Image (cartoon, rainbow, N blue to C red):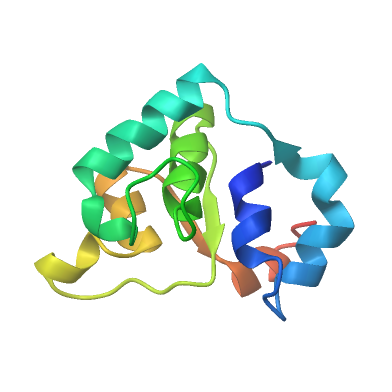
Length: 116
């Protein structure tokens, strides 16, 4: 499952964009009050994760995805790698997942495991 904001952010991505378009109707979820609250908490806690701190701003899909995973106790799948250093860990999906106790999978590892 994926919050709708992910589709907007990744629609032009050559690797993931087509994969998402093919599955959009099956995996897209609209944010509810609980997810909006978790997004707001993550955005406050990890302001470095997003370039803007507005609910519908571009480049905020990261906080939506992490929030959805946290609420539903599922792994996060992304193309990002963990960055080293305490100042960088809060700027990447794998780092925030680690800090929040959420499993993170790289997209290619997810596909190799049979993700669909």
